Structures are given as structure tokens and as C-alpha cells.
Image 1 (cartoon, helix red, strand yellow):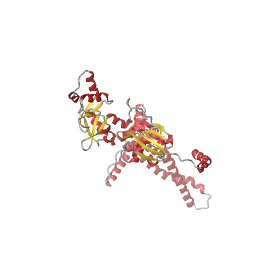
Image 2 (cartoon, rainbow, N blue to C red):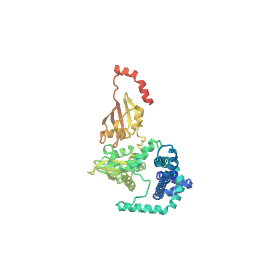
Image 3 (cartoon, rainbow, N blue to C red):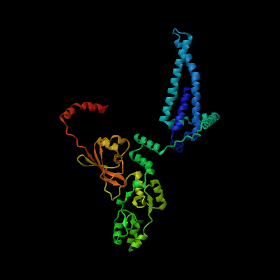
Image 4 (cartoon, rainbow, N blue to C red):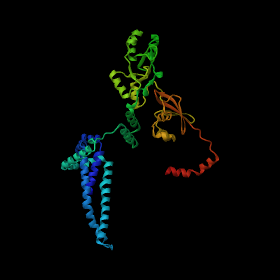
Length: 447
């Protein structure tokens, strides 16, 4: 009965914990037992009811048969005591109750549960066929018990419980990714990509746009020679075009189309250049990136004009900007490579915004205080300390020194400088401490 209880407990935890994707993979590999487990996972409510029925029957049977049986075996051990038969029987029953409970909890509950949690796949493959037989044998009882349970819930105003599915919210998936990263299952880059993907739909165009002050655009009101020179020499393949001021964008010029006509010997006038313009895609600042990406697909464009609440140009967003929110910053041939961490002087460093706090902590021993739990990168740390959108030149104090924003891409911090606090001049007491503390320090470190 203890083993029967252990079987049903293990089956319950294994079937709930096993990953469906892994079972599907085993089926493709030709594992016959995986097909049985897959059917159980698809009909999980009935199988869980079967395990509960088995656990209940085994527990009742263990209490009914086991206690009396063990009491009879134990009672002769107390024959030497100068007590009445009733007293000896009572002691034997108490000892029997303790032994039955101990066996039931340890061997019938804790051990099988731990095994199933540690290896749900292997346990599920082992219990799949026996559980299918149990469910088939007790099908009428399981159906009746499930039906009565649903009626009781409805009587109290509750709806029928949904079927068991391994469905996780975005927040739960993010936690699972973090746990997998901590366990070494996925590396830093994979963890960052998945985390950014989870946050993708929450970002708006305003948060990732290139501000109007940093936008390279062409003013069609200038003479055509100047406009053409700016267009041809630009490192960008798509350029917004406006008249008079950047709030009056009239189209987007594709540099490749312009170059084709120039190399073909055509004379480009203002009117011809205007005819080359593509209709711009205007989107509000509050547009979420998933909606923006869909709009770009529908309009067959890779550049959108972000407008503010007054209809003026706030900035632009390109397809590259959107992709970078998931995979990180791209660096093209026009950008100078910047190492993640660079020593720029005595007690001074230049650090890219995406460098993680734990990397700085491991390398330099820097402590970031309570904020370290809320953010992952030094850029996030600065933003969290500022509690607003950062600007170049902003400074924050850290326990180890001063952090200054040196460069930004759109609204994100891409480069910061760190100036460490100057170490105090050691006093005589400090010098004495150096000779008395090393042993204690080594002991702490070794501990």
C-alpha cells in the first residue's frame, strides 16, 4: 500500500511537471512510451483524478490494514511491561500509528515527489502505461467524482475549472528564463534576447526613436545642388525630406533610387526629386513596437515618422531600431568600435551602457546597493537613479564613485564614464590594521 501510494504520487507530479515539447520530441524519435504520456498530458484532468483516487484508496487502506497489522506485531514486544493487556494494546497502537504515518509520509509522499520533480520526464515515461490501465479500470468512478466535484463548485457559485495546461504568463516566462540563466542552461546573450523579447510589446515609439535633433533629413527648400550633395554623401539609405522645417515632412527618399538616376546621366531637378519621394508613414509617440512593426509591414517601409500630440515631428524610427530592441545594438562600418570597458585615465573608465552590473562587480568589486536587484545594466542603474529620461551630461553618485552619461542613442544610454572616489591616505591605525587583519580576512574568504 505504501508503494501504491508512492506510485500515484510520483505519477501525479511527473505528469504535471513534464514538458510537452520534450515529449513531442521523444515521439519524433520513435519512443513508444512517449505517445502514452502525450495522451495523458492531453487528458490531464482525468489522469490527475485517477492519481487522486489511487492515493486516497491507498491511504485509507494503509490506515485500515497497516495500523492493525503492525499493532499485532509490536504488541508482544511490550509483554514484559507490568501493565494490563489494554494498556499494552494502547501502546502498540500508538507505536503502530507512528510507524504507519512515518512510512506513509516519507516513502509514500516525500521520496516519490522528490524523484518526480527532479526527473519528471523519466518518471512520466515509466508510469504512463500503468496509469493508462488505472484510468481505464476506474473510468466510471473518475467520471462520477469529476461530475460531482463540478456540481459542488457550481452550487457555490464557481465556474467549472479549466483544463490543466502548461500555460505561463509573460512574467512567469521571464522568471523561468532568469532561472535557466542562473542554472547555466542558457548563456548571457540568449537570456538578454529573451528578456528583451518579453518587454518588446511594452515599448513605445517614443522610447526607441531617434530624436528630431539627431535626425538626418533633407530640406527641399534649399537649392537642388546642396540637397543632392547631402543625399549622396549621407551614410543612410533612407532620408526624410521636408520643406522649410522638419515639422513639414513631405516624403522619404531612397538613396539607391536617386543614385541610379544620377549614374544614368539624368539631370535631377527639384520636381524630379519630389517625384522620387515615397509617402511617409506617420505614427504617434504612444504607438507600441509590435503595432509599429505591423504597420511597417502593411506599408512596405522601413522608416516611420514619429509625431507628437501637436502633429509636429518628434523623431524617426527605423526597422533597425526596432530589431535592436531585441538583439542589441548593431555597429556598422561608419561607427567606431567602442570596447565594453575602457580605462580612460587614473581611476576613470568608459563603459558601454549594456555592460551588466554583475560583470562590473566581479571585475572591479563595485557595489551598487539596493538598485542592483532592480536593474541588470549600468545604463539601467543610471536611469533608475535619475528616475527620468536621461540626458548627456547627467551624473549620479554610486557607492564607488561618480557615473556620468557621455552618449545616448535615441532615449537610451549607450556610454557612461565612471570616476572612482579617491582612496583616503592610510593612517597609522590603518597601517597597524593591515598587519593584524589578514589572517581574519583569509579565514572569512576561505569560509
